[in-house]
Image 1 (tube, one colour):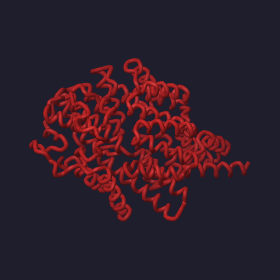
Image 2 (tube, rainbow, N blue to C red):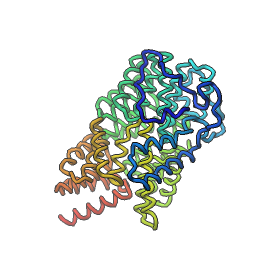
Image 3 (cartoon, rainbow, N blue to C red):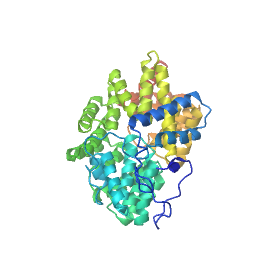
Image 4 (tube, rainbow, N blue to C red):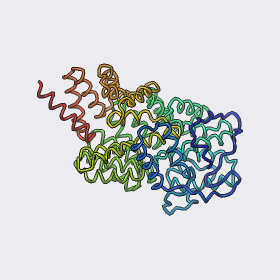
Length: 504
């Protein structure tokens, strides 16, 4: 692919009403003249990770560099040859393992080898470039690849594939649903909702559009509307993708029992390894949130038995191991995760484990992880993603506090979810603005969502505002619910609660 995808100029909005007049997008691995571009193969995972790490190292040495400039440099470093597909490990399935027929669905890709499925689609589209359905599927597959591999450079590629599909068949619901999924992946949730509604107007039974509509409403904080959307999706297209979202909507409203029952039913109906790993991991996360570490570890073990490389299960297992007291296994597990996919969540978790361990060199190791978060967010921005929530969460505790507040405010202006309310409350707190923070901390816990981090944040903010009774109540609730919710946060919660009890 030419380097035009890595510049910082926004692409024009997609227009599905008429074929695009832009140059025909390349199929990765092939030049516009139809010749192979095998002289510039995609770097493997290790090379991509190394590029991000080099950029992070440079960022630590040259703090004066503006982040926007770093974003472009990161994009070039990581996507210079990575915009093509082919360097990822083949698990023995071969490029023809997944049929590239026009009827191939994104679900079929997810249940097989994603990389092999993408390669098969590319091969098919070189022979049948006017197959709009396969262009749409390829676009969605790139979105999924970006999500599962932590590679935001796939997003511009997905956008071009979806635009090509709409140019060939204006208004087709597959590509509109793909645009919705892409917008959601980039954290453009109003855009995701708009595209999903357009897809559903064309086809009320489009599963991806139904699911993305739920996701968008949840992330916008419109929980009543999300519950209605989940009911509608369950009526029209019952199945694992809908069941897991239905469960999450109930969890966000404090109905853990229903969430668990729905996920257990979904797991009992799952047969494909990808489905088993996905649902078992959701059950593990639900158990973890309730402090049920043994149960969580059992679910993660089942997920990894189905797919031993499933990143969310590997990360979840490490967190549960840390909370259970097995810090050595937790550190080893998270080191393995971030060695392949340096994503913000596991990077921060590993950094905090290093800080909590406190051995020689651990503080420097922790700093390395936090620097990598900055590198990843720069790359994500270069790929068109909004990273303000990730920035706010990481920077509040481990970075520039003023930047955390800027990012949290910007995200709150876009959406009013419990997660953005908590992020803004905490960013205000670390900037010494506790009276302003308290209403947001209350809003984060208002739906009944059982989240120990939210309770901890509210307790700390209440203590800072002089409400010792509220602080004791919420700090105790956080530790009762999930006593190992964070290596550093749980320790600070115990210390604060002990001080409060001593002052009674």
